[in-house]
Length: 176
Image (cartoon, rainbow, N blue to C red; front, side):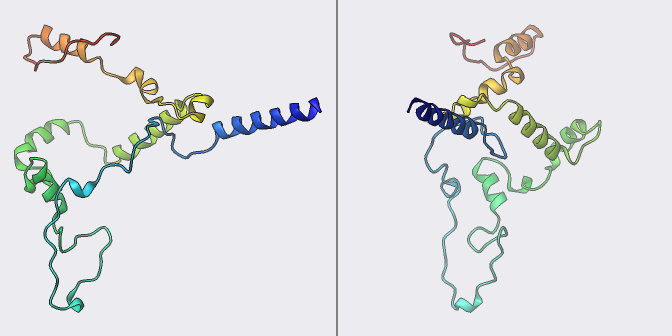
């Protein structure tokens, strides 16, 4: 009887261990429980709907493309966020000098893909311990601790150089 109970306990422990190690493609470091998420339609109100004279006049649907109520979504989003609609999808003329200076050593067209693959590798290497994964513990801040900017030290450095800086909140208790 004791041997059967011991085997059952070992089997359950093995299943829990395997479940904790198990296989998501992309590690989830920020294990937060939340509702449905943001309502993207609440950000920019859509234009008024209109009923066409004939339903046959409706164009073919274009998934991922423009539609009759939101013909310029990027420009509308730029205006809603306080920008200029002409800046959507390109570099504004006023920023061309800034872009030229930033790109003076060359621009890598595949930098987003490279950064995404490096970050995925980093998240896999810093995915947390098995029990942290099992209980959905948030390990995001621990994983990126070494890459964090110490805002107070950076603020002091800029002020020491005599550069005007905006005010910043004082260092909190327990903040490094």
